[in-house]
Length: 319
Image: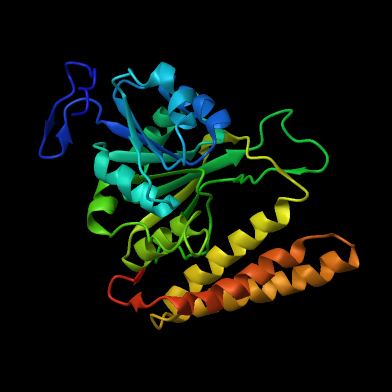
């Protein structure tokens, strides 16, 4: 049995209506990163928010992550789940099933959330009541970058809506996003063929975003919500990272193409064309590694056919 949350006495739920502040659920999924997870968990637990829980899903192969979190395991806001089932999408689905918040916010085990992170997510959802999925910025911390290192990051100059009215293109980063509970309940789960640790490597959040778009729902990318990313990759690691991003993107697009989605086909062909053009320019400048993402795009597209697709749900079928 999970310990009860220490929530304000004004917090009451009745038919999903909350008289004061609704419960928010933060989620961190991790695997074999005991040196990073404690800082990420501590940053969320230090958030200035009156009603939240933190669900940590640990897929590690040993007890080192649990040991790293020993100081926090008695915190009634923390739900720690260890599972041998590997894959980021599977971890997300586990976290959603065990969480209780009306808003579910996701960050990574190599990120640090500011104290106002959950409050800023609440604020953006309140300002945009028709938005169901929200992406925030993923920032490079001051002093973290050094020559020869790569840190995946994403900044927005201004807020941008993605919808059938506003248009769609892939935008966002899985290290900082949030969704409303109603999305998780009504619009199916994360596709477990996609995502880190899955057979198709990444892009599980892009896939959810596209499925929401096809159902007429709205996503928002906003600079008002941000986390700091400490996911450093050196020169030897960066090509594999780009390749994995490409595999996931290619498989995400191809799944929807196999559902006879012409927009997905146009997006995929545009992405391949854009990356091919960039590769030519980068080679002229003697810039290494640019080809790895393009290779991944093609590999992911072909790799899609390893799995059947449920066209009604737009989900891969894992056998």
